[in-house]
Length: 217
Image (cartoon, rainbow, N blue to C red):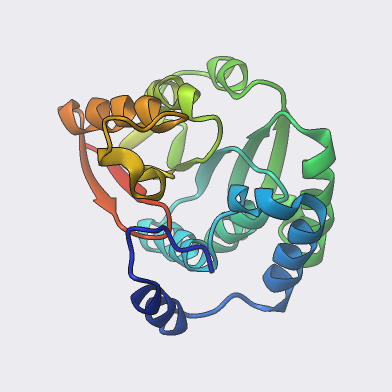
């Protein structure tokens, strides 16, 4: 369980215990990722986020999805599981090492035929795609300074009524601390950008490290 420090631990544990848990495959992936990366396990989404992503994709009826930041594949499996059999997820990442792990688990999960991995800078990958309503759903979870670029490029290719989910938008509760450094200033600017954007309707959820849901009007 990955709980941010702004949520009382007992409450976070209770919420996680009352959320449908990951299956054995996702649990194995999380365990292997932890062995490989140690303290950097925070780069992987929390189990409750995975459950939520699958639910959101199914509820939205998405068929075409894009993900910026794949890592070892946990979130991509959750998104792909929510898609119909003929759906497609374009997964954008720069690491051959971590996505090699993802490929193994995509195959084990039986969703490898729904995932199109694009290695390279995500901004370049997105810009190379045709403009227009190419996507129904998107998930952004990569370098925080790049969020505004990913957001604009995806929004230009998202259908009206489409949904973007953005991770880490509360930065372990430091988002309101004016003295906080690291990724906090960049994330604060991104959050303000979304809140002012008349093209969308958004809600920032206190799930894990903050998850913002953005619907294109």
